[in-house]
Amino acid sequence: MPIFTLPNLPYSYDALEPHIDARTVEIHYDRHHRTYLNNLNASLEGNENIVTGKTIEEILANVEQVPTEIRQKVINQGGGYANHNLYWAQLSPNGGGFPTGKLAKAINEQFTDFNKFQEAVTNQAKTIFGSGYAWVVVDNASKKLEVMQTANQNSPLSVGKTPIMTIDVWEHAYYLKYQNLRPTHIDAIWKLFNWDQIGKFYEKALK
Ligand SMILES: [Fe+2]
Image 1 (cartoon, rainbow, N blue to C red):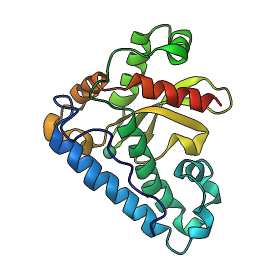
Image 2: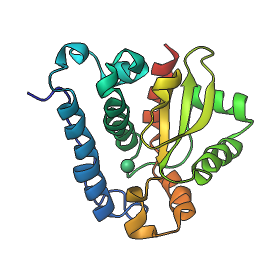
Image 3: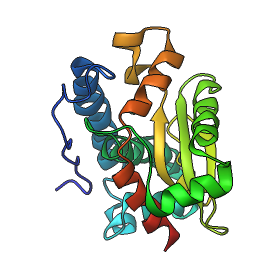
C-alpha cells in the first residue's frame, strides 16, 4: 500500500493549450510527477512509522526529523512530489486575470500593485540558474507574502515558508514547446494562474 498517491490532474492534458502544450502536460504529470511520487514511496519503505499520518507538507517542514540515511531522498523526491501537487492545482484553463480579495489586498500592500508583484515573481523565475522554482510564499513567522527561488526540488516548507504559487523552470516544464526560450514560457504561464485557488492557499497559509 503506497503511503502517498498521485492527485488527479484537475483538467485534461490539452486544457492548458496554447500556453502549455498537451504533450508537455502529459509527460510532466504522468511521468515526472508520478516518478517523484513512486521514488518517494520507495524511499520510505521500512520507515513508514515516521511518516504515517503526516502530510508531505508536514514532513518537509520538519525535514530535520527524517532519518539522515533517507533525508536527502525525501528532500528530492518528496519535494518533487509536493511541488508538483501545488503546481498543477494552481493552474487552470480559465486562469489568468488578477487576484481578488485578501490576496489582492496583500499584494497591493506589499508590492505596490499587481504589475510590481508580477515583475518580482517573474524576475525570480528568470534568474534561476539551472533547474528550480520561483515561489510566492507566506513567511510562517511574519505572515507576509514573499517571493523567492529554490534550486532542484527544494521546498520553501523546509525554510519556514508556506508556498501558495510557483513557476517550475525545470526544462521538462517547457522544453518541447519553447526549447531554449525559458523567459517566453515564464511570461505565458501568467495566463494560467488560478487566482481563486491561489487565494485559498493564501488564506490557509495565514492560519
Ligand atoms: Fe516539474
